[in-house]
Image (cartoon, one colour):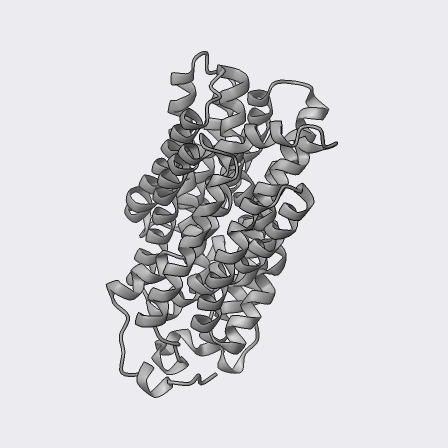
Length: 407
């Protein structure tokens, strides 16, 4: 649909400045989890008298992702209908307000409510920013910026993890102050971006004008994304618990360093390995990604010292760095302009639902198995290796089209 200012928008071409401004909002989704991970033990101690705290504190971390999963399709409709840029700027401002609220709250229920609102704004932020990348850039430029989006999210996790650890040494409340930075991002977008219009899109990407939403293509991709999200977020959520229980590493600053190392590995996987694999078939990318993730989860159960665990952690996160941009590029390629927001919302729903599911699946599987946390990771790793085998079979059956239609 035409937006106000369309005549001005038609004379503009997105460049590096717009690309960078659209990358920055994705760090808000990372902040929703990573900046709080180092203070989980202290939050557990502070609210230790509350029944079910072992489930509620992980929920504080992962509830925003659950809200993204539930609300991203609605956010996708909003950004398609009312404007991607306008929705992104407004959501960033509201995110800042809701994000800092737990600094002033001492009731766990009220904190959980504030996290619901953070999650609702995250749904708009991640959907609108990713959709705008798909609108502003095309072909190899789009692949570059989508890979950079994953890389920046991971690199920012290093800073946010260290920041969360440093602030956590002051108080478990202090890391929530970091959420206010989203207001600065909103200002940059207000000054140097514009609402995209359909006439800016290449002809081969506006073919959906007389068609319908591509459900047949998107539903298999959503299923892959859900599974991938579970495997991706599993280590990010459980790394501090593994280190504390297995290797007696417990201080927030130490835990923050390990979380940051994981984030750097995802960035390297996205910025370097995926870029080298960009011309490979989608099934090849997924085979490598799921294979690395699955093998590392299995081997973590057989690591006699923290040095061995760290090596497998790096391999795990390299695989995660390949996985996310591979799926994002597939999704963008499948969506015409008028359905891009809704399709991105469906992708985000599947991917981010993996975060709360992984957090709840681990204690459930552990309860059934009765073993150590690394033994639980091994179970997930074996499932992931099966997924890698399936992707390898698809690779042999034929290329990117096969991956889109059913890998």
